[in-house]
Length: 93
Image 1 (tube, rainbow, N blue to C red):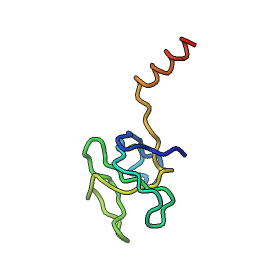
Image 2 (tube, rainbow, N blue to C red; image 1 turned 30 degrees about the horizontal axis):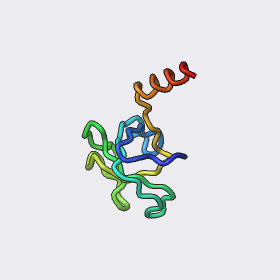
Image 3 (cartoon, rainbow, N blue to C red; image 1 turned 180 degrees about the vertical axis):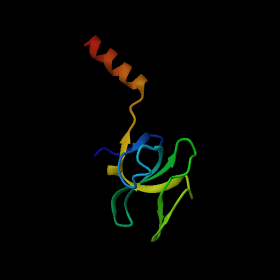
Image 4 (tube, rainbow, N blue to C red; image 1 turned 45 degrees about the vertical axis):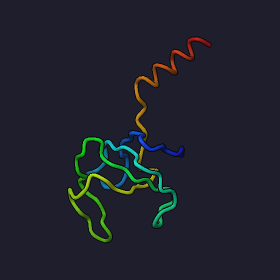
């Protein structure tokens, strides 16, 4: 999977089912971290708290709008303007 840059907006696609679909923004790529092969520090775009979040060995509800998650749980959101630019570039060629 590709490396996500800080500021990249993503949707959560795996993990705690109550968090799936939340929109987040990458704060920092942590890489290998606490047993994760490719970890990211993210924050919800809206400031809304995560429905479920593991804090140590406890499952917390609505306790934070930031967390560490695995890369495979994140899918970047392609901005519409980027898609338009790609289409325009293809048309020129």
